[in-house]
Amino acid sequence: MNLKVNKDKCIGCGFCVGTCSEVFDFDDDNQAKVIENPVSEENEEKAIEAKDGCPVGAIEEE
Ligand code: SF4
Image (cartoon, rainbow, N blue to C red; front, side, top):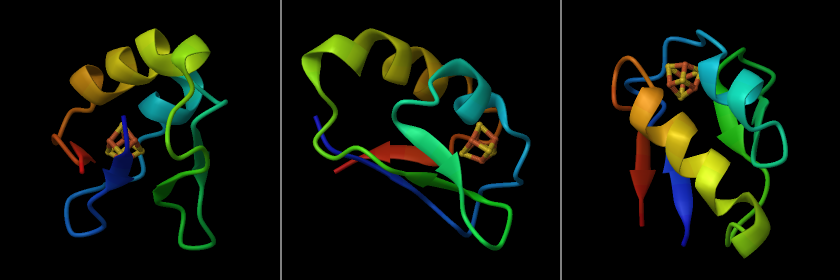
């Protein structure tokens, strides 16, 4: 699974980073970025939880 953060939507709330810091981190612009692509099997469940919980639907599968 490959994920990306849509920068046009991300509001920098930090939910994804807090939920799965193995896959998400903050960028210099205080928006989230994906730091593990493809997402490892080990982190997949938490990454999906972060994706589904993003309040603005900014995390997209590609
Ligand atoms: S949960 Fe969504 S809006 Fe919040 S930082 Fe992550 S990508 Fe951005």
